[in-house]
Image (tube, rainbow, N blue to C red):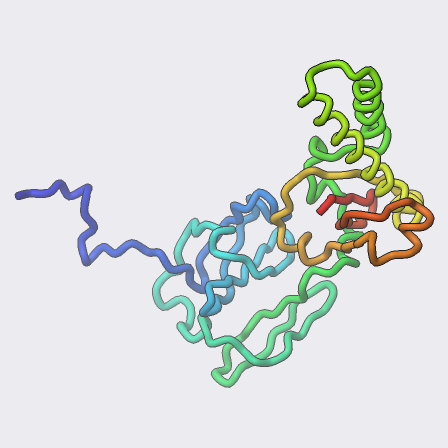
Length: 244
């Protein structure tokens, strides 16, 4: 039986499924600050992590294979195979504004970059990381709280709706306490926003400040913030928090 050529892959025409050093790539992670940026691969680790260089951003960052796509494979022989090398046991060398290079036992240049830190957030606007349409101010939250309060007071609607409104009111009261705490203790003159986004950006996950109400006497006494956990990020133009 004959099979159409379009349905098979000949052995002499293998699909390229491995990301290699020198490949030109584009970031396809819409949660990353490098989304749609184009660059190239400078190193690949055995566990699949990839060091990506983005010239337009003058930055290097470790990314997962699913965060990038190869736009142009490296030409055969253009890069040493040893550059896709064994992981180094050396402690990473980092600087605030640039990457440094070290030579391993095989004389292969390995690019290392510092992990994104909380202090780095102050160089960015919150809009670089969060969708403005999914953030809310305290005033906007209070408008919703008032609606829930009126619905509960009037006791209009069926029992299920009243249960929902009462729960929404209690949540709004707790969120108001979160706002008050951050405005008083963290934000200073900066505005405070609450986000409802699902956080997948690895830089944000690594730089969050987590506050557990039950572990802070100051919060529970002064702000009546006696339950729940929040994570917040302080940028140059705002403080953004999320309930956990």
